[in-house]
Image 1 (cartoon, one colour):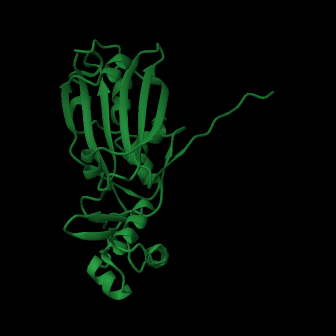
Image 2: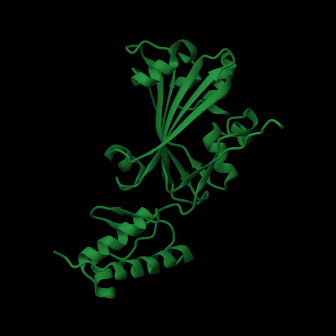
Image 3: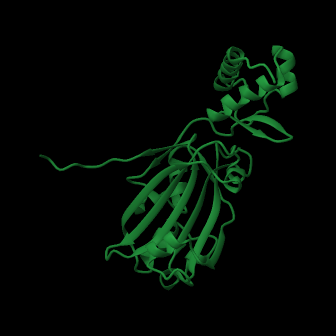
Length: 265
């Protein structure tokens, strides 16, 4: 059994963390291989694995089997403004295709468009129930891995920041631009408003869990890295739910911000 060296693990991880945070190893940079770290520090192979596990848990490093360990493409947090992001002026700012793109723009990041898998299929039972559909009925689904870049010069594909799947009743959105790849300025919420189904109330629930193997691969994170699962229900003034969206987001790069006005005593 390999000898455990906790003191060395902490020291070496702290040294690499400092080099990452100082920019010595910038986002996306390849880190020393296990063999290189072993030789430089005089440590066992198991110790190098523990070092990189510590950095992975901190959200600083991602390891790809057969390729090595790399600094995560994005260091920091993306703040999701849960209060104002869905206001028409916010989600349409600068011609943005919805709240996500507009939010990235405000944070100084760049939205990287990705293909959207648009189909008509049976939603999960809980989604069907929320939309008021029979469990065997189909709905419109829009599924994609959403990506961002640090600036316009960033690698063309950017880096994944969330998986988003949205569901809409066919009798509400069938045959509309919601079934197109590009839903236009303001995204699906603006198109629903044009169809006479403006959203007036939003309810969101957030849970923390570990990703599935498929989700971890799509997000480029280890399976032991926690994610937020945010479920979004949007309803009309009459109370009909016309959209259910499920977002899977790495906990290491997202934070949520909410503001409420309270009644005076």
